[in-house]
Image (tube, rainbow, N blue to C red):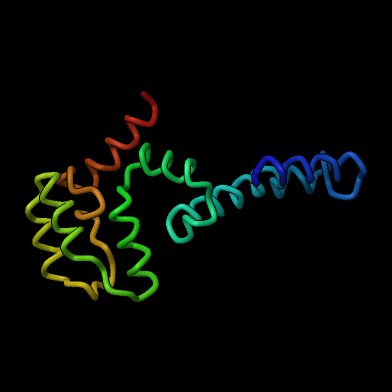
Length: 140
């Protein structure tokens, strides 16, 4: 989608139908704005509407991303105000050895209002450590 939108923008810029190298294009950052919108669309589909992404692409993102598919399903259910599979989240947290996260899942129950960060990344003991680890592994 991002490449298609970029191609459309560039073809329209050559026809002078949209700003290309005018001061407005540099000020508004049209190319950066377009890139941000495309990334936001993919991230939304990744979390909320995985059926819109190709199965292989979605599996690639889940496999290489920091959030497990079980947790993504819980986030979707919380956002849609549906019950969360407490047993699956509890087992996921215990599998990673974080008993505090597992206890939080049981405490909040199937009608939790948000998925706690300790459940999203149970292998980390602190949110700062998780952010630093994600930053470091990104640039390895």
